[in-house]
Image (cartoon, rainbow, N blue to C red):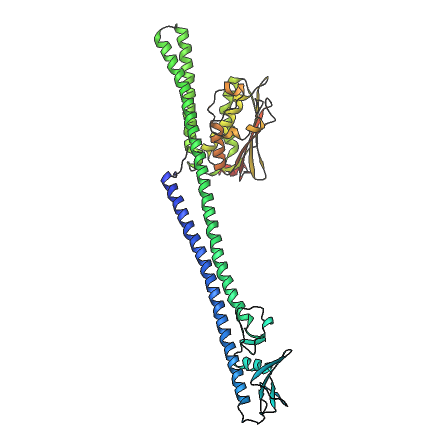
Length: 451
């Protein structure tokens, strides 16, 4: 049987070690990459906050300069309104000093002008917003409660404690989008890697299972061959020892020698079957596929089987459609047809036992059917009979000589022709039908075959 290169234990251990190391290394890379990306996001968040804090400080400094321009006038002189303080009024009461007063959402600066008068200047926050928009377009002035806790937000100091500077949301969204892209890239790479590891492990498991099945099949093959070889060899040895011992007369000697000759034929048949297995099983033999006359090949095999049928008292009937051409290897396919006919003749029963052989073409496929009135096949054994050295447990099969590899070789050869070989039976004692299907068949004229 054809056997490919086998995996050694050292190779499996090396593969497992490499997989574990790669898995550990890649897991560390994924975790570290995610952690670093998170650190980058936090750093960008802090940078956004620091930038907003600097802008807030500039707003406070601008307000302080506006206050200085407003109040830097001689004592007793009423100052002029400014852009930041567009509304200014004088009240007949003296303020204790410079102070900010709140009235709802309005904010006013109060300071003494003289002993009996004070100035009240209303702050226009919109003027500060316009100044901020002209100097820092990426920022805007909002109430602290409207900022939403954005990363690029910084609260203003007194007297603007209810206000905050906020950066553009779009800029922060771009930062978060870049972060998400990096995370997706890392996670995607991790998923692909672990999927590849899973596929590799699955392939290895499949290879190990196939290797185990191949090893079991090989062991069964060797065990079956050993058993099948011992039986005829033991029979030949016993017959020769008995004849040489002189304990039997001439008639007995002829009987023992006839038995030895039958065992020798059985041994030769087994060797032939083993050679067929080594040649054709597992694709070890390269078939010589070419268009040939399938009808003629079946007729030739029928002629060879007719002699055995007469000896066994089997009625062999056939319905062969002539001039069927198909691509096949004549030597290999002859083995298939011979094995199918041999099985049918061995197991055929009845009074008289019968075997039918039919060949026809259906939709471009050559269909060969070999039907017998034999012991039949149970449904659970319809596939098992094609396994090497499989022998049914019924009494008739056990008493019938056979190697158990003929059908296995036949299916392997048909599969190499890209065909199908199946069995069908209505049950025990109801006969069986073996159907071989070959593609690329057609019925041609006799002139075309001769060409």
